[in-house]
Length: 153
Image (tube, rainbow, N blue to C red; front, side):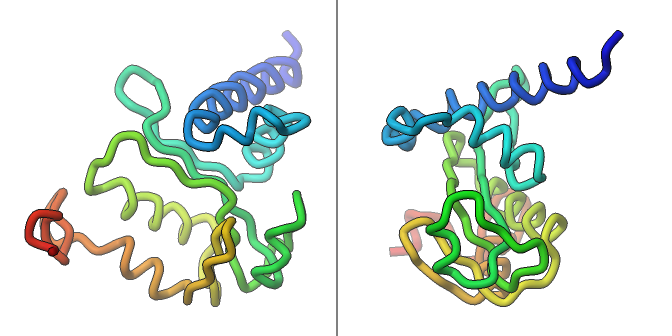
């Protein structure tokens, strides 16, 4: 048994599943030179997280990487493990469960720890602590602190 081939097979399978999910939300991915390779890089660096349904299919997916400056996120594959900013390259939630964003927030903190900023692909920059606090708010299981969408208006 060749362990490396088995790992490579599993990595490739996870990257293909990630791509199939993501391309529904970002049609431009189909124009990329190697989108499956992009996901393989993110997964193997620990920069990709997926939440799976009971049947094993992906229900939510996020890719992000630490960078020195929010503008560095515009440079493909550039990262700095100890950079003060987390750049979110991709985030899609298919199953809009109230726990998905808080769970992503927890995973983000577990993977990257304390940071100063968070930036998004379209250059939206926020304070990292505020982002984690706002996305992680839960009053009761499945109910956000700020109320339901019907009462939020």
